[in-house]
Amino acid sequence: MDIGTLIGIILGWALIIASIVMGGGAGFINVPAVLITIGGAISATLIHYPLPKVLGTIAVVRKAFSSKEQDYIDLFKKMSDLAVRARRDGLLALEDDIDHMEDPFMRKGFQMAVDGNTIEVIRSVLEGDVDSMVQRHQVGQGVFKSLGSYAPAFGMIGTLIGLVQMLRNMTDPSAIGSGMAVALITTLYGAMVANLLALPLAGKLEQRSNEEIALKSMVVEGVISIQEGNSPRIVEEKLRSFIPPKLREKTGEGA
Image (cartoon, rainbow, N blue to C red):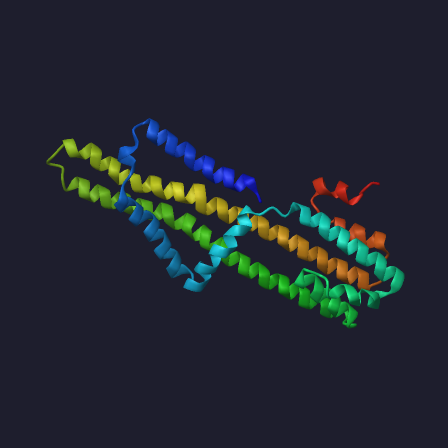
């Protein structure tokens, strides 16, 4: 689990709430402002994206709280072992290993290689799967980016509504200050939702998507390199190019 994401969300909200409470926080709670800002942002997002895609984004959120750095090393070791076996016993010797592969993407790639498909066919099919995955991930990122852009906009709409209501009571000067404060609450709510939730989550999902693309690209390159009959050392060098530099020493680089 990526503790940084959880800590960042909790710490950011806690600091703002603490500063509000220390300054006397009763005036910062306004239900109509919440309805305008959050309700409006969600409504606009539902117009932007079909309902099933928005609901599907809920399951995608867990990726923002997961850590996959170690997967690079696990995948590297698995592919290296398969490269050694294929070089020693032949590509068909990997057929028994295919049924035990937990990753469907890897299993599909090696099954196509064992079945004798050409490199071009394997690359085309696997990269097509990667492209489809990227499109799905972009929808999840887009939903949060939309929330991040709509929330401040509806916050401003709420502010304008509050200002109109305030100006209607100009005959009572004592109500102007409190009315202005309520009008600005919606802008605050919109900025908080956008910058402490929606946009950070969109950025983290994009980062996780890039990591998953790198992992699947490792599989594609490994499968093709093994089918080509490259030596295990060459296969390992190709795989290392997808691994973050700070993790490469764990693969025995430079040993």
